[in-house]
Every structure is written in C-alpha cells, then in structure tokens.
Length: 221
Image (cartoon, rainbow, N blue to C red; front, side, top):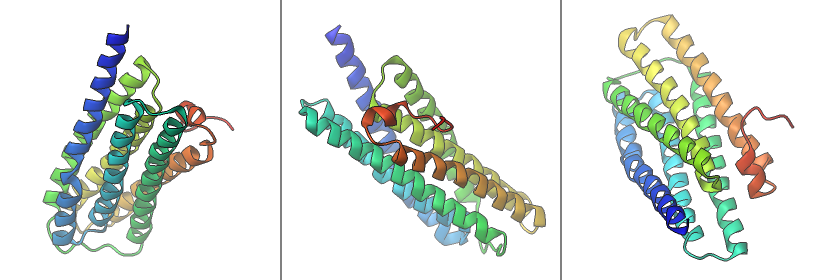
C-alpha cells in the first residue's frame, strides 16, 4: 500500500514538472508573437502565460516540499501558498483578457501577421486540455490539494486558449470584418469573467485548504 502511494506521488510530481517544463517557452514565444504583430489578444496572452508560469513553479515546488517530510504547520502554509498563487494567476489572466475584450469593442488594429501566435495558441490549447484531463483523473484517484488546484488552473488555461485560438483565427481569415471585432471582444469578456470568478471564489473559499480543495465554480454559498 505504501509502495502504491509512493508511486502515485512520484507520478504526480513528474506530471507537475512536465507541465512546468512544457509551459516555460510559452511566455517567450508569445512575447515574440505579440511584439511582431502588436495584437492586443497576443499581448494579453503573453501576460497571462507569464503569470501562470509563476503559479506552476510555485505549485511544483510546494508539492515537492509537502512530500519530503514537511511538518504539519509547514504543509498547511505550503498548500495555502500554492492555492493562493494559482488563484492570483487566474485573476491576472482574467483581468488581462477582460481588458483586451473591452478595448476591442472600441479599437481594433493588428499591424502584422498573427500566424505565429495562432500556432502557439493552438499547441497550447491541445497541451493544456491534455493536462486538464490528466490532473482531473489524478484528483479523482486520490484527493490532493495541489493537484486539485492544478486541475482548476488548467481548466481555465484551456478555456482561455480556446478563446485566443478562435479570436486569432478570425483575424487570419477576416482581418477587416466588423464581426471579427465583436466576436473577439465578446468571447474574451465571457471567458475572462469565468476565470476571474473562479479565481475570486478560490480566494473567498480559502479559509482552509480543505474548503479550497472541495470548491468547484458554481458551488452554492
């Protein structure tokens, strides 16, 4: 039984590390894409990927410490730090996307190609969807506060990536269309609202680690 638990812990840590390593090039690649195109969506994407990378690092570090013989009081502080960082990353992502969505209602201008950003966002969507499914499976197998936090983060990441892919696809196909502007803006605002709500609820429900771990967006008060 102890061997099985150790194997599960090792598997979870490897998944966290793989997610961190795969996400590391994201801010650099999206930063280059944003600089070359000046697309507001890509600038927001760069900001939120940077915030999320910090959250991933903290979660991986906290998980390692939690399973390396940390004391009970240290465990609670580490778990709180991991969840707080994830919540703040979700809030930062949501605010960035909300700013983009609102600004696109009034200003719509792309000065370069968004092909690179579209490719990066598509790869990100596929990767983040897979990690979302992976973390969800692990959370069902055995409840772990850090893993639950990652499942929520990757759900938000995948949804935001979906909006970015859709928005950049419209820019590629119909760059001058009025429909492109408003569909892009409304999509960004809708997903931004969801991400901000999820992050805010994690903070509000975070009186204890157990409450955070049980929280799902849409839970009644």
